[in-house]
Image (cartoon, rainbow, N blue to C red; front, side):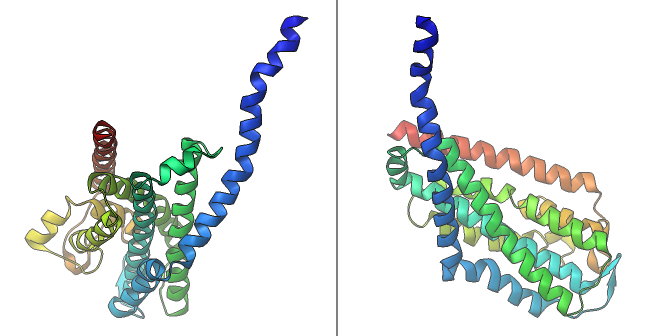
Length: 269
């Protein structure tokens, strides 16, 4: 009888903390998402810039490429660029917040570290959906052409694959600590996009080098439903395993760098 009565009392504090943390998690998620969407400078680079690049590079181009047209090929590329900018920015900001002392403030609340990571991940993926939705809407209204599988599969791959660059943003901001770390991560995305065959079609040595960069496999997979791996300007064909290998390899590299950066930071403390 004693055991029956005492057991709930030992478990009650954990249960109370869990119930108290749930509204905290939802409230923090809403506030963080609202903050991200209200950041005009950040949303410009996440949404407006990719949409402008789509207008410059491919809007209305009806030349056939695979099962779609050039306009859709460019549309997918720009949507993917916007999505990775979003996940990089949100994850990078989260890492910077932790290194600048915000983590200590979070530790004083019922919000657990795992819940904090979950909130940031969810916010990053919601924000990543914004440029994809907007650019696809613009493409649909301006002549981007493809079948239903092209539209749905490319959007899903671009959205899900952008999670890789949340790990990238985390890794860069843990290695380059300071208020400018997120800016460094986002700036490098522009360079990697050029090398990754996202902005303009490449050939020759530059293309060979580009195949080794992080955005190449991700962007190629997003465009695969419509291009089936064939590159513009008769630059060759990429098998799907090559792009998958690129994504897996860079996921392992970024995850390793993030863990190393986190451990290095703790050792200094």
